[in-house]
Image (tube, rainbow, N blue to C red; front, side, top):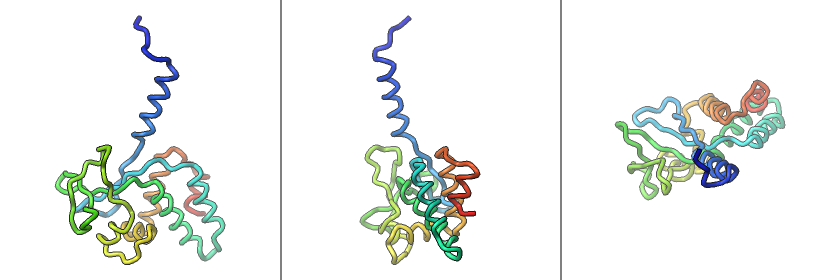
Length: 171
């Protein structure tokens, strides 16, 4: 039997760190093709789901739909790492100096310069309002695409059940 070079706790801690550093999901932005757009996300923290649910609960009856959309966008914005396009099987991001131009991109490179939900993407989308919510709303084609994306992200993050769904999406 070969003896381990490090203690079990050290190797478990190191392995957990590796897992957490690589924990992400790339979700396609619905209805985009030529180019296909993908957003890389990190897991949603439970506190983000709870915060979103409370924002919807606090909204007045007539404002609940807008509050739900905003809460969903907030989760997507907070958890996104960045956006990339796939064109003819190759990955690209926007050139930060010229948002009208795509540049080759490796999302798994440690020094990757991601396109974010920010002013560069706003310029590429032709959005005057550069605030993250406005850019996020423009990136998705329908409000329900936003809700569906956030739901997939929350479910992948492991915190999705019927009760969480009701709090998050509104009743």
